[in-house]
Image 1 (cartoon, rainbow, N blue to C red):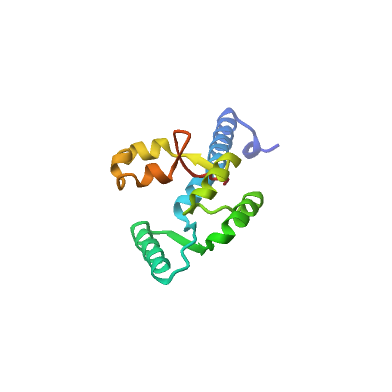
Image 2 (cartoon, rainbow, N blue to C red):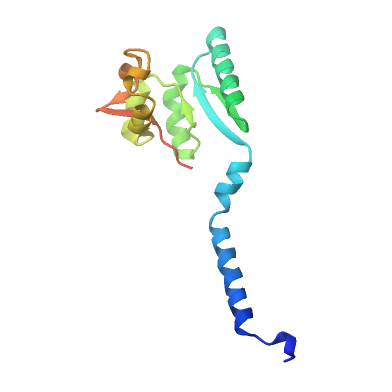
Amino acid sequence: MTANSTLTRRKLLMAGGLAGAAATLAAFPAPFVRAQSARKLVFWHGFTEGARADFMAGAAKRFEALNPGLTIEIETVPWPTYSQKWPAAMVGGTLPDVAVLLGEEAVPMFLSGALNTTNDLVNDLGGEAAFTPGLIAANSRYKGEWACRKVFR
């Protein structure tokens, strides 16, 4: 061995420090990549009528404008096909990120584990009083829990 290739305590500590730093950085790449890359949110609704579909598209555009880097992909799922589409999507891992549901779909989705409770979110937004009176209570609560679509990613 030459003098330049001798392993000294300093070189060993430096190599160990670099390896530790590399391991630490390797443990956290996904959040940094996600924070810098474009994101897509998939949104299902069943409004096939022109005015309602146009309203949803406009709302999505306004939301995108307030959230740079986010793209909303709208998929119109006619109400009569929802009961076949969501179970197939759940099995395939392709449920939407956000969906407008009919009550007849919400309970089976909740019972199947396809919905999450959103109690903390509703409370953070100001509770039931922050919403149109009666709207959220009548349409978004089951067994005392506020609910939303479960995220499987």
